[in-house]
Length: 354
Image (cartoon, rainbow, N blue to C red; front, side, top):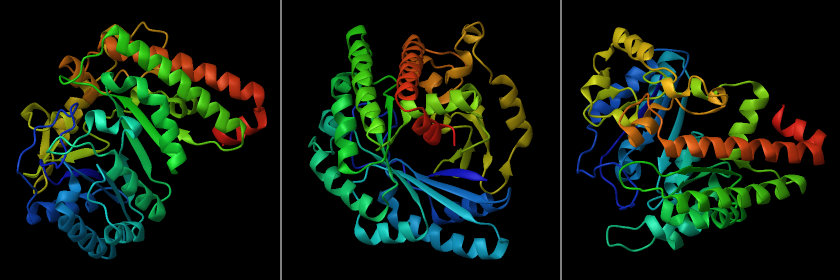
């Protein structure tokens, strides 16, 4: 079973687009261990993602979980996989040595050259210089780590340069998603800038590919790979099934944006999951009505409950901005794929069809 452990509701940054309410609340050790027990109780493996807030504020509990899971893995014979999403400011060599030893996958929230626009510390100071040093340290121990950009409207014009900066820093895996929620406002001008910047990033991505130096850039790679494989991304949400978050108090919810909403509470770490409630939730979650007649519905992430809830307040209703973004991105991904295939068909097949 895969669980996302919200170790704390606290954070040492004050990112302008963040939708989480900072609170001095952390997960007690008994709940942490019970969550680990639950992860091992079902399925062929255990999966834990350390999350927050900023999970590195609870560094000792992460290390406690790693030690505890060594025992559980030996006891059950099941392997365990670890992930963490972090703002990176508290990473150090000792922690990264331990994380690398257990093959933890780390996603570094880093907006590149746009970092100081939205991602400041509690005193309002920018964090790009610090993150650059932390990123170099992370890549030294874990070269496959992913840089995770959140693109705010006011920073959209820096997207392409940020992609280049992160790639040249050493990241071979870069994700980029628009900022959503009540703290951002996408105007027509900002969306136009986002579109232009994604096109410029696609040009850089294509140039690197054709030079024999491909890297993973999620907005394009995901659309291209899904299309080739015939995968429908709208079926990926699996609300309440795939990666369930555990709140600091031990309650389990359908997804991150639903924490605190009793209608989406699926159980707790001491009593397990309410399977009937899971099934009912799965039945109510479907392709939004407004998307059913769209020719692109099978290539769009229209069923992401978290994004929809952030934007419209309803997990089954897509916002106009999300719809426009998906349409633009699908067209750009197809254009980029055609360009790469025409220029280097064998290389294209080797990278995308393997």
